[in-house]
Length: 431
Image (cartoon, rainbow, N blue to C red; front, side):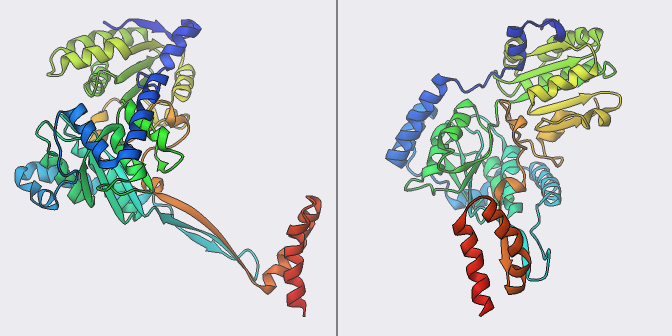
């Protein structure tokens, strides 16, 4: 059973551990990633095939999934499975279309037009974990914001299964979501391939999608050469409670998120000691009843935490310091608490909202920043795939209006070239 500890009594080392992440990008991880990135950048497809053999034990001839396989993938799915994926797709499209940033322009004075255009990246490379994992929902999550933003070329990289193929359910999700091409490569090699291009895989302008610490490390390694989204993985869940929520429901979310991976972390901060103890008992009981009991128990034992806060203010302060990927506010009145949350990838309100509905496309995106990136950026959305381009258009009349201010500031800063560029235009129009 996970021990219950009081937050205010943690010594500096214990508090650092409470704020730590199991997927941290250590020097060892970055060294391994740098080797892979350099290898793929220098040797392209041959390196990708070598890593497929090394990591997935498969020999690949063609890296791209034939378009015919994507077109016929639905034959391997039941009508119920197809319907569920299409419903999730519609939910995601509806949500992400609401938040698209709009271009604008206005005239502050006669003769001056200023504004901002939002333009999509021309190409996007998406990564979704593959191999033995079937994550069609993650394909939808990654692709929909790019489609809504208007990206013209969208490719997907995912690791092949033991037989060297990509599962039909993943291909079906990719096709209905708007992915144009799918490639059988995953992990750090895939990130490098999309960043620099190979004979088979095109170089893209932005890379996004979830992965493990090696994927996150590879994103960091290539960030100087291509736009990347953020670290997304391993799964991290933080639940805060005022003691009113059902311990069984809290435990069920912690167990559910822990079944992803032994590196997943699930933590509770509550103001009620009895609730924390009840959750501890429920975790043990619920975990052992599930098929992935071993993975769940390892994740909870190594990375799970049950902490007691002196009050909700302390619990909320911990949230904002931690910046979780997923946050559950299991309180009687969650909305006032939400108003005080500044850093979280995606938030679930009340104990009747299972995090799993967020995983499966109720609307908000499940590709969220982890490893503390939620303190610096937001989860995947259409705006991730848009660039802001502001513009200024000045006519003769407009220059007359703005020149006094601009000229005065140029003199103030002793930038004579700036001043001359303004006065030259005034002189020309004065003739």
